[in-house]
Image 1: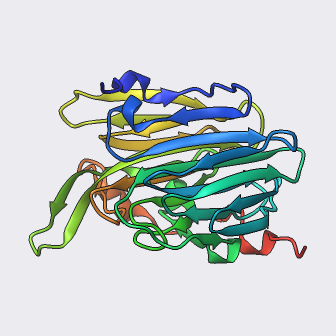
Image 2 (image 1 turned 180 degrees about the vertical axis):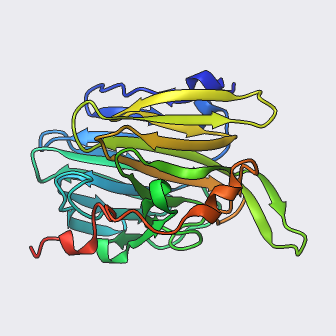
Length: 293
């Protein structure tokens, strides 16, 4: 079964602690699964990971995570994704874990994908996260790379993105749905599955996401609100943030190579040559926002 393009926007279920869930089987792809949980002190969450690598990102709140490979206490500091840099935890296959909220609520997004080998668990703190300002003009965005290609993980790449009010993200539109090399044999584009989860800095915020192919078999435009999820099995994609609202998006990727190599839509690639400066509103969050205790 393959999820039709018009259903690539997934609204939150908000069923108890479960905010949303995406399974590879439902989408009809090979690698990526995701869940977002909202836990309270009275609602611990336990799981045994099978033959998967698993990355948890603390979106807000603070928690203890007890695992069969060691305990990680007092993880997380930010009250929301707009008040600080992220904490995350990478866990290898065949790990048991339990999450215990230390604040009234802790929100966690996690993704997992099948792997053949095991690596060591790794705690990722704000100082381990790389902050980059990319693009230019009204197509400038902030990227916080939590798990870069080929780092702690075998397949998963994890990053946060901030798109300021009225600005575009991933523009020119790009795609990563075909594994190909350039004439010199260097990887030009990887075949990567992608899941994006969204937040906004104030109520009623929204963004507009377009996903399309040049043969016009796919051309979908979605209005995205807080806690919505977009899956991108294929196609060029880009997003614009509504005026007055900053868009936060958490991105999980996995696929044919440990990279984020992508191809621009050739019709819009010229836009890169027009950029003369970065948007001074960025960064939205930075390493200096981490509290001392």
